[in-house]
Image 1 (spheres, rainbow, N blue to C red):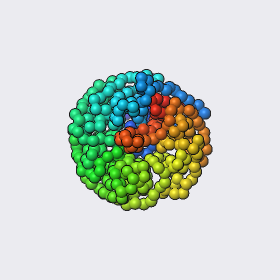
Image 2 (image 1 turned 30 degrees about the vertical axis):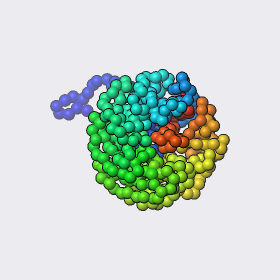
Image 3 (image 1 turned 90 degrees about the vertical axis):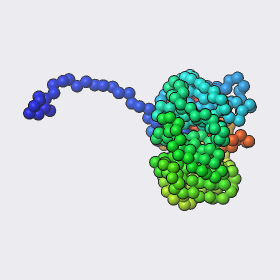
Image 4 (image 1 turned 180 degrees about the horizontal axis):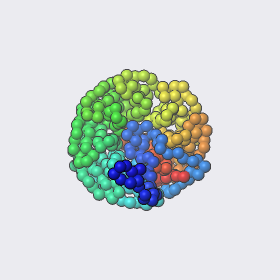
Length: 385
C-alpha cells in the first residue's frame, strides 16, 4: 500500500501453480511409528477404487513372501524372501508407486528383517544387526553400520531424526544422519516387538509381557510385567493416550495408560489391533470386530468369507482388511457395511512375529498418498482412485 517513503505497488499479480505435496506417507510396520494402522490424510472413493498394478516380486522360485510396504515420495519399498530357502528377507526393492516398475533393488548380505522411512531415506536392518541408510530416490548408500552379531527379529522404527531397534536384550536409538548410537537400554527378553514411538516416548513389549516405556532421551519411564502367557514379544499399538498389547499368539490383550503403564482394560482378538478416531478394529476367529476404544462393547462385526486374517488399515470412513482366501474388503467404518471388494493374487494376512518356526516375519497392509498397498504371497498389488 506504500507509505511516506514509497509509492504503492503497481505490479501485475502473477499466478504461480504449486504442486501439493503427497497427502500422507506410510513409514513403518502397520503404517506409521505408532503402528496404529491409521491413514487419516486420504479419502478413498469405493465406487472408483481399482487396481493400478500388480507385480510378482519372486517370479523364479514362485515361493516368495513380500513384507509390509512403505509408501513415500512417489515410491513403494518392500522386502522379499524366498520362504523355501531362507529364514530372512533377502532383497530390498524400491518400486515406482504409479507403475510398479523397479526403481532400484539391493540384496544385502545377511538378509533383512525390517525397513522404515524418514526424511528422504529408507533404513534397512539385517538379522545380525547390520544397519544401512539408503537414499530413497536413488538407492545410494548414505552410511552403514556393520553386523555386530546381535539377533534382530523385529522391524526398526524411524521417528523425528532417530531410529529405534529392538535387539536381543537391548533397545537402541540411532541417529538417522550418520548411524551414531544416541543411547541404549537393557531390556528383558528383547525380541519380536517393533518399537512404537511418538512424542511421548518409545514402547516395546517382549516375551512374558515385559513392557517398557522409555523417554526419547533413553530414560526409563515405566516397566511392567504381565505374566508369561503365550509368546509375548509382540508389536504394541499407540492410540489416544493408551498402549495396546496384543501379547503374541496366546498372550493377554491388554490396554495400558501410556503415561503410567497401569492396566486400564482389555480387548479381544488374536492379533494386532488397529484404530481410527472412535474404534478399535480386531480380528477374532476369522471375523473383524469394531470395538469401543475402551475394549468393549463390540459395535459391529463383519464376517466376509469367514477367513479374515488381516489387521486393517483405516482411512477417512473406510476400513480395509483381507482374508487368507485372498479376498479384500472395504467397510464403512460407522456401520461395518461392505462398500468395496477385490480379489488379491494370493492369501492376505497380517503377521507380527512368528510364522511357524520362522522369526521376524512382519507382513501387513499400508495406505498412504492415495494408494492401498497389499502384499499377497510373492505379489504386491496397489489400488487407487
